Amino acid sequence: MEKRRYTCWVLMLIALVSSSLNAEEQVDSLSTHTDFRWQVGEELFYKVKYSFLTVGTLRFNVLNKDTLRGRPVYHCRMHMKSAGIPFVNFDDIFDSYIDEAMYSHRLESWEKGGDHILHTIYDMNYNDSTIYMKMTREFKDDTIAVLDSTTKLIANTQDGLSLLYFARANVRKKISEDVMVFSYNVYRKTLINFTGELKEVKANGKKVPGYYLDGKMKFVGIAGLKEGFKGWFSSESQHVPLHAKMKVIVGSVRLNLEEWKNWPADTLLQKE
Image 1 (cartoon, rainbow, N blue to C red):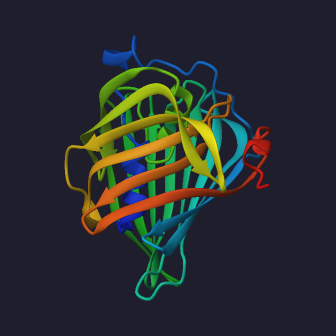
Image 2 (image 1 turned 135 degrees about the vertical axis):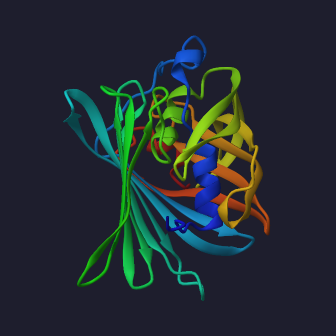
């Protein structure tokens, strides 16, 4: 199977916000969200920096509310794009369908790979406890099948995008958990420490309070992601990610919120 291509900062972001939680074992600790409020039309734009360089951008959207296999879900999108640095060229999209209990029902991605697009679908069917996996290389004049398989869906599950919203919904809780991450068709573990504490962070040029979490990967991933990560989320009910720090083999990267739409608390970060 073709090895999917990610950049180091995107991988560590996914380590921060993308895990598969075993809800059957952890239902009493990290079951569902509390005060989190979905906002259809929300758009968040981030710059990702390595040292003084901007290496790429991330844009998150809550596109609409839909229905999938009879369950209400929110259609969310992450678009990651390189910033024009030599030898770094990507323009990838990830779509996730997330239910109101903050679990994923479908992930679809389009990743640029030279002369083709790598198109991946993970379809989480809770009715038969199965994840249906499909992967194709889409060329200009041809499409080649790479993977068409299934694996057991062991519990209510997250994908690489849905756990961003899961984390936002749980940042006020105080609990540390080993969570399962479904990555490259296998389950792995990452420690996430929800502190429930407000800590000051600089975002959009201002110092503001943000709910703080941190954690540690227990394996070295593709492109060298490893070890610790830290994140801060806004204090009102949308719990927007404000800032993140992540470690990779070559050093550390930072994720900074730059622009937003349909976030009612945006006056908190308006520059003076």
